Image 1 (cartoon, rainbow, N blue to C red):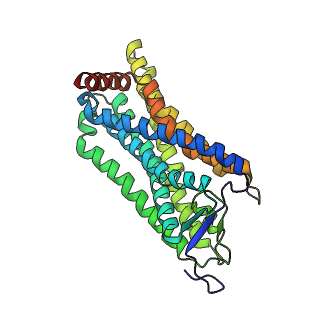
Image 2 (image 1 turned 60 degrees about the vertical axis):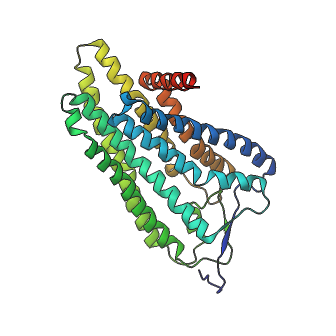
Image 3 (image 1 turned 135 degrees about the vertical axis):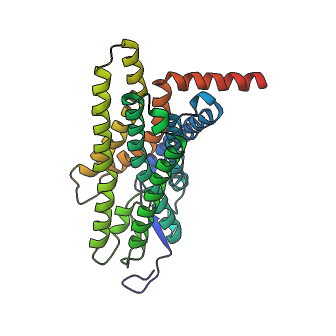
Length: 312
């Protein structure tokens, strides 16, 4: 890729927290522990969703998709970030940067759509319980999941290709710990209006529209729950939705805080710290939330552990 002064960008320097070596050591330990918890927790959710026949339902199909997404998302940047925390040469190749950007955008975008799909699944389960097996059949669930993945990857490939084919300025220092697209766009020498338009369209598809669908779904769910005569039925309906709603609030709440708060011209260390914690902590919390708030998940974990223990 040629820059304004006819040089070729073959790698980028990820600035990250290089100015705070002591902080890097602390973040290395914290991020490593949280990454391992993310892998184990989400791996358990996927395993029990496959091994326990009682969990072969649309709800757990989407939940295992969400867990797989969290593993993929964190794996796109945490391993390299951990290496950079301990290394003096914090670089990434041009191709590696493009791949990392595309995969992180795709997995993050897929989660936005998937959370809306999960809200619709809960709406059908609670508002139309008799028709639930017919509406949310296996073919429909596979189609919804495939739509989430394909649309997100097409969007992310488009954004990445447009960004990485632009001419870059002389320096190649990325003021971030990953190849985050907004940080990369700051290195481009020419007008980035096309990038901003494409990203705006993508943001509308992945933020207002899914949030609106989730909001509408929960309005109908709440209305149905309030009309239930059985206290046990209300409690069961609330328990099946509470975990998903908690994940939605954490996920979209942090995104809105990150992108809607006033931006200063200079990147603040607090902003970068919040981004790290958001990107690492949120995927770690998802399996914990679903495990604590869902009796079926807890029972399935106990059942799988008992089977593993007796088989040994």
